[in-house]
Length: 245
Image (cartoon, rainbow, N blue to C red; front, side):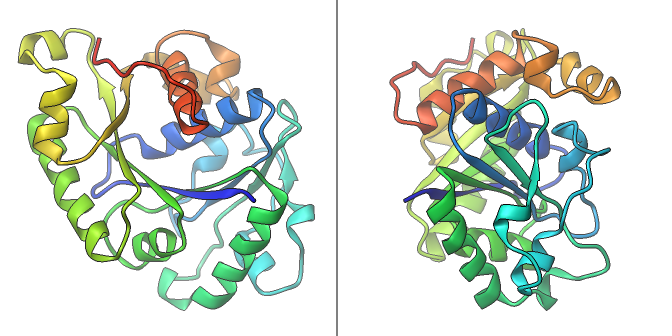
């Protein structure tokens, strides 16, 4: 039985989508069967981060409505165990039938090791749709203290929804920022009130990989790519130390 993981952020600009794409490709690189869903209705761009923007892809709504099956999801040309469903256009999150969405994800658990949901930023309907059906939640935040504290507040909202498996990923950390702020892993956990799953550095290669139409892990092995690979190992249960440096 597979696992549904929602990648969320309480606000925009955290780089949540690039983290989702990095984790999806890292898990597929490890031989895991992965289904990646862009749930950001109206602002979809996960296909760009996955280097799939030139690949025809069904929307998850087309599968929810019963016209297609998960077996017809787009297959990544570089990662044969990675499948992708894009977000529907012109369909507000509140119009998506939660029961049909949940039924699709239950089917996904039977076919895949991991189903990753790239949810829209904020705490509106799309956030709740993804979070309510997730087995585990990865909350992506920026590195500054206010962003970490905001992530903690988002985590408390998730706790009120009955979500206990919530982990924090701090993204876009400048190489000298942690030293300048004298931050430690314990500091981040204390400020957010959440267990820290990983840290991803600020990395120009994230943008360059998208510009050149390549998945990040195919473009480079270092920086953010290496961080995503470490986090993917932790998701799979491997013991990999968490560090800010």
